[in-house]
Length: 364
Image (cartoon, rainbow, N blue to C red; front, side):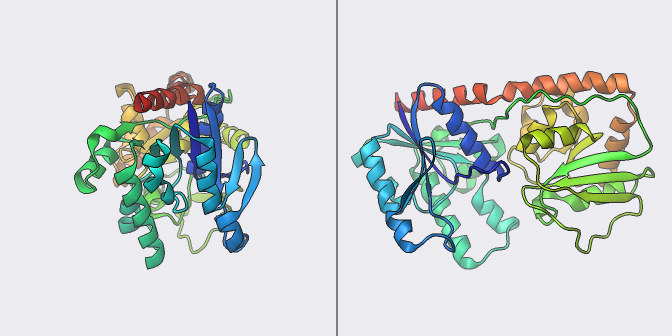
């Protein structure tokens, strides 16, 4: 089987979740005797020339190359893939769709989120960028042979409102690297240490809801906030009991260590298709709270309902924080083992096996 991966690629340790997922998926698929290559584009207009965008070609890593548009087409013809796996949205590969029949290949598209929903409700960008993203989504949703989606809710949305055929949708999971760190609860102080992941200015992250909830708590609170880029405290009206720490971006190992230093991981989002950060936090066993809008929670067993709160209810979020914080350490450590057991089912070795099965089904 020959698989051509297309999308954004970055060798950096700290990257956006979709880039991280695409990179790890390629790495693990390639280790399963699948002949695979990853091609990305000369995206940065301030760094690359027009000539590079059309004719450029450079090696980034083992079997990873950056291509111009024409070079991409020529490489694809020469490589003769059975399947193209698209891992992030981009316009540069759209020319491959009219060539599908000629090249006798299938196309799979991994949808990390519904772009049209983001553009309408959450993102503020100019009209050209909106039109470009709408066009990309419309084409890949209509002409791809396989749509890999991260939640049943999104699958229902695209079939109902975007008229996508249900027979080409498959629900998939994100994976994590299991690194072996374990949260151990051995004492409880008056200070509650909470850790969150995400940009404070992103509407869908709903940090305002978290601030409402913790303002109702009498304990002093240290809120540590991390993202893939460094953040600053600008015009934040924090409750008097709250101190916020904008941490510097951390790699996987350092972030897992940081999870273990805190009491709770909280994700108050109004829209999360999966939440890779929640799964990575769970791998350490830290007690967590998530809203019912987080896609990963649909995979939870019933016993994990104790970690969920309805989105938008600051009072219930406050009560849940105190409920979990006030558990005795023996109970916390028992829950830690349950949480880690769930997270370990999502190792990349297992997740990549699911993808290869989907590839085989599609090609058969």
